[in-house]
Length: 289
Image (cartoon, rainbow, N blue to C red; front, side):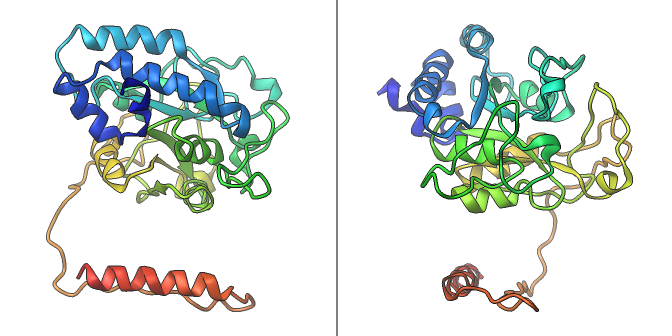
């Protein structure tokens, strides 16, 4: 049913649209309906771009596929530039800070045919591991309101986990992609610095040294296969980011693949449930070779 399209992965939605088993408008409308039904409970979506998303969906339905995510909606953390909506960084003073250009990651998602659907919440300046700010309020964990949704990309994590988005964009210095994925039960990827470009058209355009060394943009989704797809779309050099580079995404895999399992941290006692989960993940990797 068209109303249930929100349950599909981003890649599957692209296939449905490509094979004409669903239209981009049906897909966008399904996610808009899901946002209406769910967002009040978690406060993950801050701004819904319904009008522009539906217009883009109609244009997608009238044209040939332009990329691997043709007609598929995506969400964007509120510290990433997307023309037509403010890059607030969760700060009241920046509520109307409209960017002049899309960030490289938004531009590349659009070039792949994807459609901006909504903006998602974060703590002020993305500087905390829980998502709450004086402009948008607190984002709740999608499983239980008593737990954190994580941060700083907690709005993305909660939106994805509740089916309000099939794929989204966040960023990470010290865990801002990975922490919400852990808290919300979705998948994310912090790429190596320089793999995916970062740039803004709003001041300050020059990042401090810490951000230059560690800040990366990255994809978030419910399915690992969607991260792989997004990675191929987002990676590569952009002239606005001097740290970004063009390097192969694939190459020879070492004959011996080794993984370290961290089950002890000095000064911290890990819960037995955490250790059990780490070892279970190790068993899965071992079974996969």
